[in-house]
Image 1 (cartoon, helix red, strand yellow):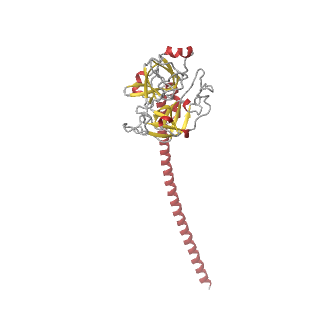
Image 2 (cartoon, rainbow, N blue to C red):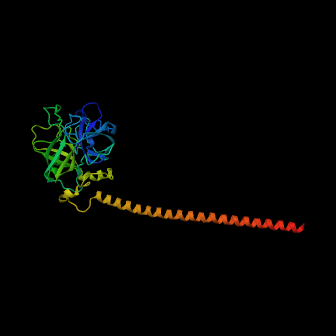
Image 3 (spheres, one colour):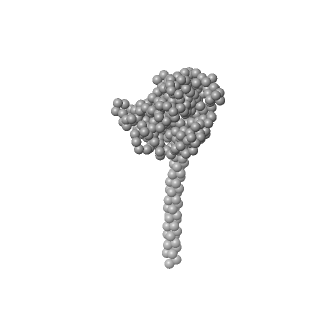
Length: 350
């Protein structure tokens, strides 16, 4: 789990405004809508990488360095913001959203330094083709608000300690019925919370399913109820859908060092796949490795041929040099013989 923070002065708690997840040694996944200067408005002014940082290893944001944790807290600069090119906020100036709301709400933060994955464990990403509907429990995380104290939803309580909430992934029927039966887009995934849900400040954080001892990310927090009635009762929230957006993630993270089971967590989630065979990511990596080896063989053969050619050229130069010396010696000998003959003729004439 990562906290997305700004570079302003103040505590980590004051600077944290969104969540994210470490998915590779140099990449953190978050929501696109977290990366606008006017994030609460029409979202027309993208944020600059220099103004964003990532915080890893935190549990309690009120403490700069938590001594009771074995994991060291680390603040890392962001080198580059990679936002989905087809992200559509459908937002008004006052921040209200129009259907179909946030579309392709996903982004990557390329870190300024590589993270040691033996210390900071990345989450695995769900495989393309995974059918989430009906899978049951999922888990959302964040330091977002735990509620408000009444209208107009401005007096919100933000916890210092990382929160977890259990949510149920929508069935196919619930997804189709979302937003007065307008349904969801392919890049969206919804959940239902019985008594708790994601809220303001949780944006960008991961929605995961547990598979063995691993967490596999199936969504990133996108949007939910603007001003929920408390206590909650079966509230719905929407997340960016990893299985649909994974192709984009793979494209933007070529050769990324990822979780121990690879990009897909194939070993853990085989039973849930709706397709078979190697994933496109693995196929690409296999093709890249085959091409690398082929090119390596070509280069090796070329180096060998070049070496042989240089050796032959060196030998030829040596032979040419030797021949020139031989010809020079013969010419000198001929010249000396001619001189001797001329001298002999002069003696005879006298």
